[in-house]
Image (cartoon, rainbow, N blue to C red; front, side, top):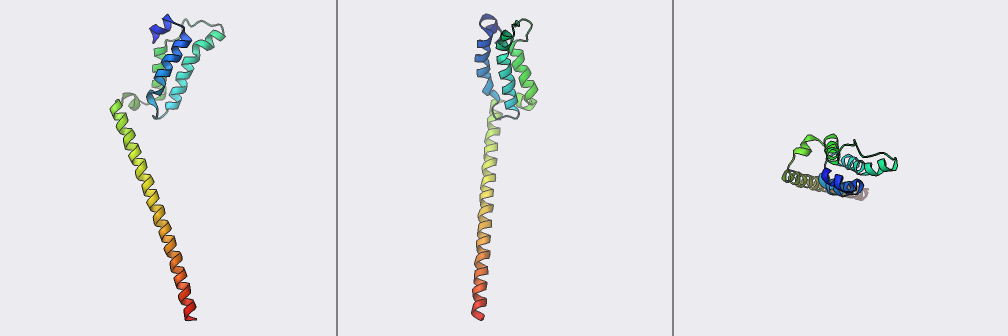
Length: 132
């Protein structure tokens, strides 16, 4: 990334590279903050150029990407393999579907109990009317 930035226009190269790196941690905690930091790193050359400041002395793009990852993402996320990340996504989806099915069952039971209670009240009322 740093070599490409030296050879070509820094603002264009940064946009291309950041665009490729941005979706790497989608769905992870603090991923949005990570993407925001990457976006700021990509906009830096254009911002400095508009202010008339040179890019000399600025940290290289690779350092900014690593800094954004270390600042906003946990060590667990950074050290996890793609297979572990995929398994975690599957586990979370399964957990969510179990919770939603439990919620559906509990709602169904509650509806059945309320219908049963209303039905019993109606039956009790009709029996009391018959005795009168």
